[in-house]
Amino acid sequence: MKNHSAPAGVIAATLDGAPLEAAAAYLMARERSALPDWSPITVLLPTLYPAAEFSAALGHAANRPTVLLPRITTLKAWAEHVPIEPRILANSQREALLYQALKAIDWLQGADRWQISAELLTLFDELTTSQIALPLSFDAFLQQLETAYRGSSGAPLHFEATLVHRLWFAMVRGAAAEIDPAAAYLMQLSRLATQVSAPVYAIGLYDLAPAENAFLTNVAQRHPVIQLHSAGNDPAHELLAAAWANPEHNADLRSRALACRTRHPHSPLQGKLALFAATGLEQEAQAIDVKVRQWLLAGKKRIAVIVQDRL
Image (cartoon, rainbow, N blue to C red; front, side):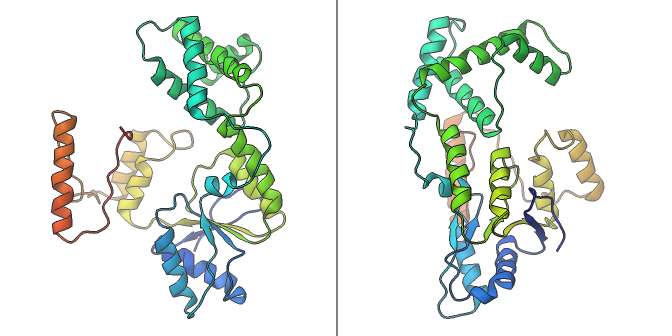
């Protein structure tokens, strides 16, 4: 078990072995005295998909006929149960506001305004959860972008800066009496931090937004917050983690690939990864259908289909 970087005040640990079983054993070691009632404790997972498996791992680690399990949830789902006064503007309404703003300025003839609206909403939500406020002055915003892009300016950057800056404030004015889901999430996190009354375990939560890290820090001032990560000793896991590492905090993709090849001259994905060159979406869907059927006939039960979007 090694130390792992974490927000201020948060206990960090890196676990060896199967992640869920190792996390269950760690929780058992720290919370043995609370048995058989672990219900005040909260366990945060990246998604709810492994919740049932982790519950089973906790029951096995406790080794008791009856155990009241912790609350097992995601950080977003936990925060969404906190009531707030302002009305939350639905994303469909936000997209409509942006669509009308794009239509009014008429800068993107022939473009799919709905798609652009959806992409801008994603950008605006990332700015909000990262607690980044756009300067009121466009010139200040453009200078900020030029600094971020190391002095690179020109017509494309100026156009994109104008588009983002103008639409950001059009959105703010259009939803003056309401708040967007990202802002609501920040407000709910802030209120939730004052309501937590027991230890919190965060398992496998990587690349949290500043507001989410601040939430964990605030809770840690009053109750233990433990952030658990897998050691990733499996070469295949290491390779995948390097491939999908956040480029803002890590080397470029080529450098990460060369580093992996140095540590593992023979690819850990050899024989585990195959590519299929489909000629279209229909053939792609048929190929997936056939492969899944083959896996089911072979007795495989844990199958995931990961797509670029839900369409």
